[in-house]
Image 1 (cartoon, rainbow, N blue to C red):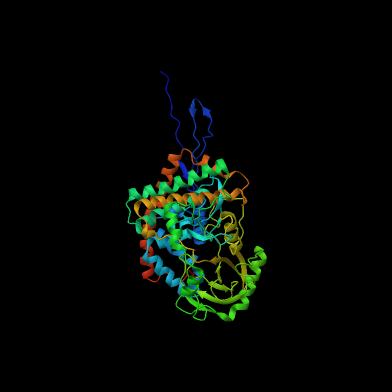
Image 2 (image 1 turned 30 degrees about the horizontal axis):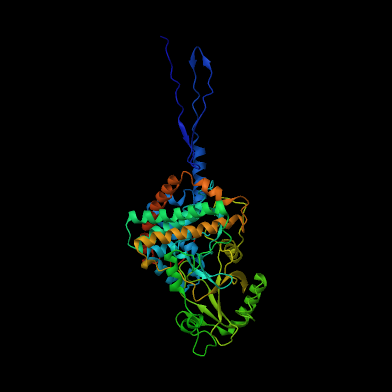
Length: 493
């Protein structure tokens, strides 16, 4: 038997910059039957330069490892620096709202989830690039669905928060929603993991069933959940949300004379700014071609106030209520329009590259509402006030979201199912009223096959993310108690 010779393997060389390995290719020649192996030369200078480059990149703040893979003290520092960055202006201004928000985040894991979108989405950086793109809401969770007025002032149920809207893979909204339902069902409903799995499945099935309907019948522009056609769990919300405008105005907002906002711990009248906000209302009317003679014929601003303590993510950002005179001029049918300072979407720069652009700040938020809520609130828009971008919307007597702690085990599933349907309608409108230039519905349905695998993958993501959220929240509480958010990150030389 002839002798066999085994070719020696060249050692692997590791790149300090990329973490990849490669092997030198043997370029030896055969002489006298012997194979000569050319061994690679290890250059220490090359590794020194690689590590010098790595040190520079880390020192400059580059994220070398995806944040969701960080553990221990590195993860704690990431959470801390992300929250400092996200609230930099509020911390620097020593805003009372910033302290209030951090206190709120510390008390509840669901509030922490709601108020830390940037942290959530940095863990998803660049993910799901192969999935169909939609105009995503960016912050889907059980309390961002609700009852609100449509363009005719009629109450409808749908998605109701467009502050983070941006073009992104549809799965980004699905994942955010699934984790939101999981965390809320545990904290607000005290439900078991088995029950929470059923709730997440109900949400996904509601979404896919509605998407199948829109793919077949193309009714997404006409459909709406109203008092007459909603499931029982939503009909109850309509009934609980309903209130006569006169009672709502006088009980919650107006001073005894009815001529302006009252002063309390939530409302701070600033009547001296009426002219500033009259201009903002006029700009909104021009941009939206607003003409509502039966609701506010002159669009006359009667009073303005600062609204304190509202929201979770936006807590501490400037928010104003503007009182518009109604047709009767007796303070029984006045309108309140909210102006809230707009920010960059938490998803900006994190989503896979896309040719679709929703715009910036207030214009982006208005674009989200105009696409995702067909026939929605006519006062929804974007204006500049003092050179800053603000979004606007109407406050209404029946604008309300569900009380999660009142849901039973079965109604949690019912509610998740109808929320999935509402989100599907918002996504389906991306190619009708938005910029997406291909048929969204069949693309999403194809991307979700095999369906059971898609659902189980989403559940695995949900559980893994919720477990990481728990650890992040515990670390945040400790850091907050030690004063970690009294100042921003500084670079010392």
